[in-house]
Image (cartoon, rainbow, N blue to C red):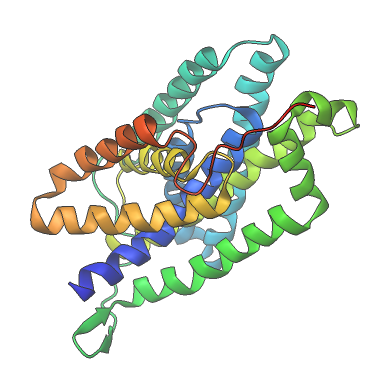
Length: 288
């Protein structure tokens, strides 16, 4: 049971990275960014292409830059024109789904649809009593925790983080106060895409990755953003950890096919009974 719990915590950290990227995009633009899953996949496959040419560290660095630029490209070519035309969120959602399908089809065309393993090396695992932590899991742990901490500091402390929160809370007032909304939109899409690619690389070095795994983790990320509260970073992180642990126990006691069922059952419960999220509360404001 402890082993399953530890594995769930580590998976939860990876889910939190993807969910925080989804969160920052959704809160600032109100776009249900399904193409997030396409960027999640594209970054890994760019690494697979560049690694034989450049080596490990340069390939990882360039794959993250590629994901960042791909996020900017999607905003510039798809969402920005829709934003200028004042299109509603439903049109953006359908467009995002189209972008996801295009990215996945390109990946399948170039690399095939089988699972790709980023590292076949057999490495010694860390054993603490009856608990076993693999080397890729250690990488995930030591990379995910600082990344989440840096993201939290960026949003809460820096000037750009303040502008992102201002756009998220009241975009009209933020523009009146002189905040350039389009610049912030580029920033959140680039940063969110960077987070998604980081999590995908960590997952790929552990168990591999296939072109269709981006949709599942994107939907899980969307669920934890809603469950944790769409304006709560703390809620997103906690919900990611809880959901990943629940998914791991579900897979152990039932089967992997039940993971999505349990995930969306939790979402439906929250939408019915806790629409504000697990860490947010409705506050009554008295008018004077």
